[in-house]
Length: 215
Ligand SMILES: [Zn+2]
Image (tube, rainbow, N blue to C red; front, side, top):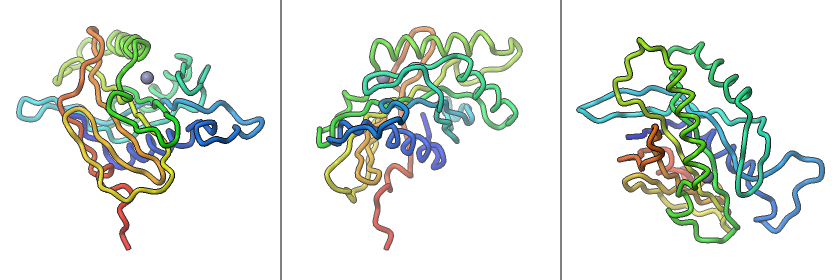
């Protein structure tokens, strides 16, 4: 199971919405600004086993600010910046590196479906590379109780004409929610040397309640 805590989902959504392409809203990107498109970041938290089930508690998400190339269809990064984030977080012993997330932005008004959060061939390749470097760098004595896997979250997102006040929902390996005028679907995957497989369950109480009118 992948459990996404509130601080993590907030960073994932804010970074994803910030990078959402202006062209999908019928606007030009403001002159001189950095590229818009897919967002990417690292996930940290705890991994443990409960009743035979492996659980990933995603406590925080750290968006990558420096990428090599970003557009509406892809994002690539340099290992130096990736590792700087990872290494800095090792100072916090309660936060293990759990994996990464990235977004798939779609045109305003388009009906985003679960298939839009499917991992592409490139996604599988990069997840495998991240897994291999993590696995290689792991201390041999470190006990990996819940399987030697990482998490990959793919966030399909698109703008709606209006804010929708509706409860989100989750089903098996994906969840759907609303944030401001955006609708999103997050698919959860586990990565290992075999590539990516759907997670068994993804839970995020905050996603369920986004856009609820609390007045
Ligand atoms: Zn992707």
